[in-house]
Image (cartoon, rainbow, N blue to C red; front, side, top):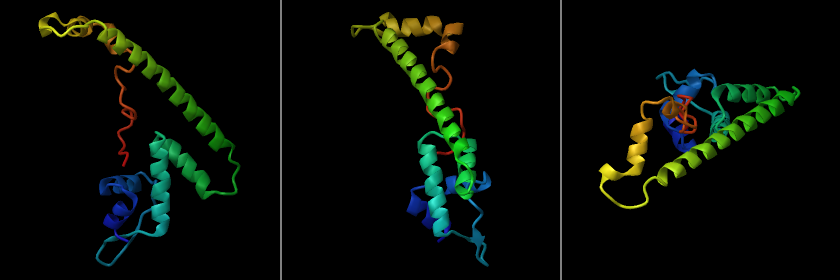
Length: 156
């Protein structure tokens, strides 16, 4: 199948498939005489594996490690367990950060209880006061409030 067919079969953008190839997560496809990539069912399965890992918010390096073990079925899976344990820890940390962010947003929301002129809005006033302070840049989730924002890699 050609790249467009692989994209449709897996619900993955063509640019993402090429990115995963460049990153070594997908093996290079064979090429036709006309230089078209030709993908196999093995590519479909591997791409599905990578996408599932990405849906669990795993980083590319984590996926590389998992693929190594997937490609080496005789190896001990202790490192896989350790990787997942570490990832669970990162997720738990993020959950706590998001809970602190939620509390801060609820506290901020409580600053304005009535519909009034925006010049009197407690939320806007509080945001303006904290805009230049260290509090704004160190607030929970201030720089990475979007899941996966620290990783520039495509998800789909």
